[in-house]
Length: 312
Image (cartoon, rainbow, N blue to C red; front, side, top):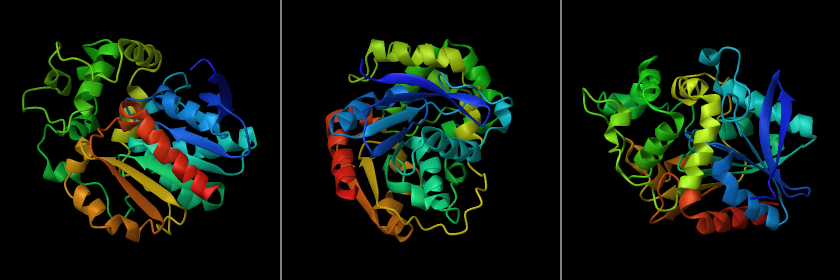
């Protein structure tokens, strides 16, 4: 961890925090999900650097040490895609591999559609590519207490999270999201109240890790994080050709609750997803949860490195 360096780069009027390690012509950019941050890629960054790659992991705008946008409620996925392009330009990088987790898959795949010439390949963990013609409609098939539906409601998550300190919010979400069941609250229950305060952290997530996350979210808060992704899913990105034409790998944990979202498992296992990503390879991890890159770093590092070396 000590070898990871940190810098701030001005992008579209904001200073974005970027963690970096390694050197060389082949660059891997890691895009985090929620409630993650650059730190969630600590194991993968060191592994790819030791294998001869240059690794970069930015905090998205409004996350961690990166500046928040002036109007967080207007933040969008388009901002993240433009930030990525501007970040690469600022660093003089022409082409990259993108490794993305959770909602980070959306800007990763969208970037490849808009800037195909700049992407050597894409690895996503836990989230398959879904073209605009197959929009997310999970809330229509799940109860009112479905966590995404709750967090899309302006003010509700803010009030729920606001009762607790940032570290406890992250702790609860890590516990919830590492289970194999979709987080759904009862009618008169808030999402944070699903977790018993005495419930232990996942065995692969230490108190030190939690403190790191807590300190970063104490700085940023959750205002931008609730807007992107949860309140931005219906955004039109202006892509006309929706077929992803670069090599891709999807790593899916068999115990990831996302597999239980309506239609998702069938969409992946039937091969329907490959109609939109023709060069897609899919790997299933029998014990993998939603946080597979932190839970099973050696396994994920091997899969990522095999993919990178195949497509240099």
